[in-house]
Length: 191
Image (cartoon, rainbow, N blue to C red; front, top):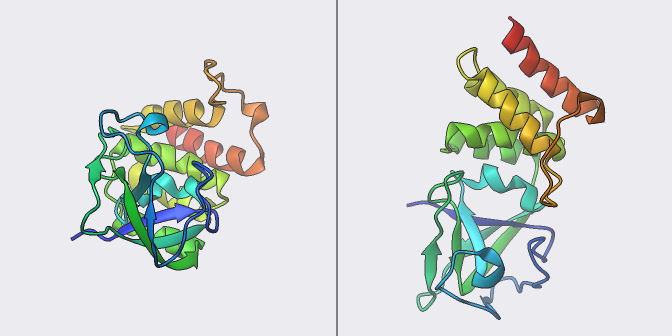
């Protein structure tokens, strides 16, 4: 059975302003099961240890998740994270612990994600300053057969401003750590 976990910044979700109570049942203010749009669906999101790598950007604190018996749970469709995006109307959080690089490496070792999602996770690891994990993902998942796909996804994801505009990749816009990882990818392509 999968272990459910949730990431947040302290006690507050960075996907909303809800202030959670630890060890108590938290009840969603909004719960709409007729949609999968997170903005209108409401509820509380959570994932599994095998899928949480995709969501590392969601916080600095990991919580264990317990679902009350009378709660509703929806497994939301996600091509980037199949069976790793769940929402519920009631949730109990416990065992808060600050996220560390060692913890993220352990989640990576347990991870079960589509290959394209690992390319996205490389960028997430750069943003979170987990460069050793970004390099490990490259070592384990990237080779001459998929390097073009990986570079394309890296360029798209690192350039996306999430404002509806078309991402435009510019190497000179990268910061030092992002250039380091990008150069590793280019070296694989050119080897």
